[in-house]
Image 1 (cartoon, rainbow, N blue to C red):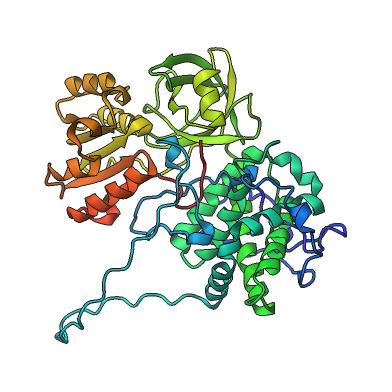
Image 2: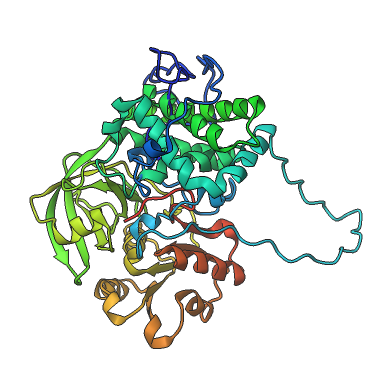
Length: 509
């Protein structure tokens, strides 16, 4: 949901109004850690949305089948398990390409939810002294209605998306400049992000931080509070058109309430962020090191201080493809000279990645969004770090190693560097030099075509890993398999971290 999300409830035919009155920016020093929108001016329905005026199928099809909103690059919610809860898993209707902070081979299907275990025989009665497990919270009435809608529209997801954008651009042509000139690679992201957020509205421990992150990230697109009602109206209009058997007034009211909450969290987060950070930074390319024919290490100098943590990522926009942003991890811990480095692999049809690898040169200026991600080191702990990096996913792993070294800790760090061929181990020399410098660091290259062994399988050969926190970065498939392997060998889910963004909504090339 890295794009505007709402439309006024008057179908765009009247002036003003909407589902809510945007709040003013919070005063300086105001807390931004609330877990839900604070009390204030509420979203007030102007009228029932009802069935929208029909947009002809021909008109709807003028929106390219493979595009998305600028706000739909989806700032990833941290995809690591935490004590706060397990990251939501989108259903088929909201499948999003995992965003792995641009590690791997480009877009791939969303991480599917783990399948349910096979049915087992009834357990014997437990003794009275055995504590009973906490009951699973029941879904709220609104959540049940929303999921029912999503199940119905799932088979028509492409049509829903096309109709949504047709409504948005016909009713609110002033919003078109917020989106890329070519929508081919972005069209579905905004809607998928919205649907994903709506589906998981009950999981506030994960959803609220996710939405705050998206609200902050939306600033770089020029998104304003008044844009949100437009997207919301068109979301309701598209669902009304395709949820023909389940849609009723009660369902519409549930969607209005849910979308209102989603919007307000994002608006409040953006307003708070505006008090302390720019919407974007300019960065001048100062070096461009082509490591292989399709991988480059790009180093930039931001135009003003850029605070971030090792293990995080940011979004980049190039001058060759305005309004198209892609996520990349920082390839080093924060440096005293303020420079930022990124490892970029050019992927087929990857506009931004190919521009950064094959066109960017020293002196070029790019734009950077705010830092994000939670795959960071807990320096209050002395646990070891088990790091799995595949392809350009080694970039944030290298940053984590540097971060541990700079804190002067001697906690063990085990790095498994996975690649398909020797050629793909483009940064192995750097990692081996770090190993020579730091006795607590072990680096193990795992080349699939030599050992016929997948990276997660190789990890099982070593260990035990009971006292380690695990970090994964790489292609979506590697992260999925890696998480399964780590859980199989007994690493608790709350000690496995990765920012494969999006199972929660996608970025791309």
